[in-house]
Image (cartoon, rainbow, N blue to C red; front, side, top):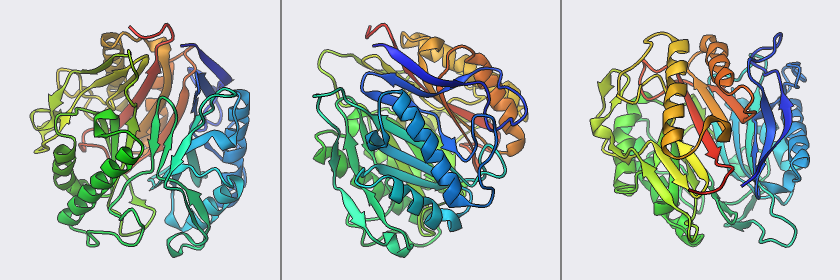
Length: 420
């Protein structure tokens, strides 16, 4: 499969005054799939539009997403998923109101996060979008369980969305929480670990139902991204994940965020789902049981079946990589540069085992636990990807799987020379 790259950049918003050591692109196209860099109120030169104005920054981000999509042969109508990160829940009305006005009748699936920070201190919102743009005459994206709320959960903005957006090779699912699918209630409305567990159990039951409605199943899930709002919830929610995904072995990334769309939400899960393609291989490499794995310097009592790499046809997706070497030794305690170097060493090995290489990477997403770590971690990762021009995103989060982990990188690749 051919991968085309559009609108390459030399500068990222985490460094306003110097070029990044490795360039990235605003859009990449592989078949019908368009991979996009996250966009914000920062322009390609690092200048930030309208400091203090969340709506204006949202519109600036959407302008850049639209330009990237057009360059790749698509449009805003091709957006299948939005992951919207804001630094204050109070910005939701302005941010989501602006998105709603710009995306009439698009009905994307969505995930909403409140994060510890964005690549520049003045940024208020960042939008990470996924898109599918079928060729003329090809089957279009099917959107399941569309909804249209004039006042989203009493938050004073209109919103149109759906639960599942299905392209021919990938399904996008709305981030699932402890809310019922009819939107009428949320379980686990306290702040205890058992409340987070109840929310995770319902979220995964909802996910099963939604995938089944779209002709898929949990067996097709390649990756899960688990968001929680307190590290104390990890030991409660992961056994629920283990129960629902027993024997499936997805890759995983675990993130601790400040908060979610509504105060009662403690847990949210995103999935990366590839329906089986006739004649194409599916490989789950380096399977492991999480209770036998180290996170930082310790094991955690998490009863989950995971793996390090999933390859579906010519697509490869990795477990979030950190300073944990593949032999489960933490490299660079307290040193984000050493951890980022180790993470990218891991990436090289894992891609190679799946028949891919560095130049096949189409998207890199970096999480750091402190703004002080952002530039150093991103410099390492973009430096390792010099000349590759992947799509790129970065977030500052509250925490990762272990306090010793300072950074994590998610990697997606498309092997250009076709399946093995």
